[in-house]
Image (tube, rainbow, N blue to C red):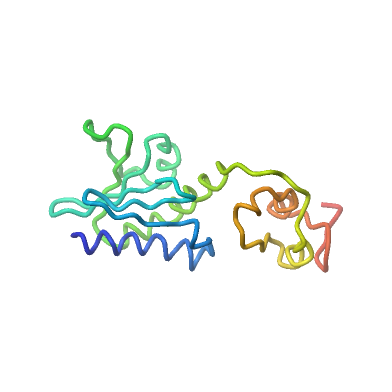
Amino acid sequence: MNAQDQAEICNMITDNLIINEQKAPEDIKINHNSAYSVINFFDVGYLRIKSGKKKTFISVKETFKPTVSAYTQHFEFIKSDPLWIRIPINSNDDVADLFPLFLDLYECAYNQLGSDSFSCCSRYLECSDEMTCIQSDTRLAKGCIYRRNLTNGKIFYGKKNNPDR
């Protein structure tokens, strides 16, 4: 794998989150520098991708070791880079196998956003009928208390309301 592969890995990850998981493209950014490509969620670096002549790996912050361990046991610590965990990548299938981890890390980033709480927005009927928050502004949606109820299967309005749940 090489630098071209590094960009391909970044695109695989971001495309999966944006297309398959319907995450907002403006909340996911790729920065390329001479050492790594970095994937940022909500302007914070969560993943580093390095593809060299000998090794290709994805690095995750060491604080997420329990999260990483839930998805793979194939990771290593490097003395020269103690704040990051390296996950070796040998093929695109290795990247695809980690898609659930990347989604989990995205959700961690989302949950760390600060926001003001409010009951619901003007889209509450549409959200109820879809049984999920449809607010496209992810930072605004973060503060919606009704969104939390929808996530827990409680629907108070619309055609699918289930107030007894």
